Length: 193
Picture 1: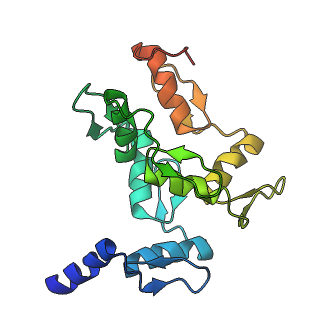
Picture 2: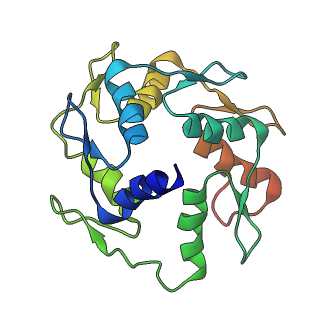
């Protein structure tokens, strides 16, 4: 019912996390969040890209990934009209239009490094984790995130799945092709890639 949906949603705001993972210390506000999290432990990736066959644990991650193929940039800066594939990219970009460029209020309690965005601090803290469960089968290097292992594997395979649609140059990471696109648009003050 609608009232039970509201009750479940309110747990996000209250910080209540009644759904606990029986494999690790993680806890979640919503049952669906726990179910998605469990795929980290099971390795299940039920969402597959029809273009490149890459598989994902979460449907939203697949949707974001598909934008690398379509070039869709639904998040547009209201100040300069620049488009972004992900909302977080837009949020990070917006700081160039403010005086808060150096405001790094989110501090890591392990090393003191500061971050403007709480989400970036959360990602950073994983690198302090002793447990690095995602291991490279080639060299044994461990990673805190499966996505980092995937990027690392390209150093062994030479895979470059991100291609410039203008000149055909290929890249191993999506941000590299996005940065490269400035060569064609002339929109970057940085050196050409």
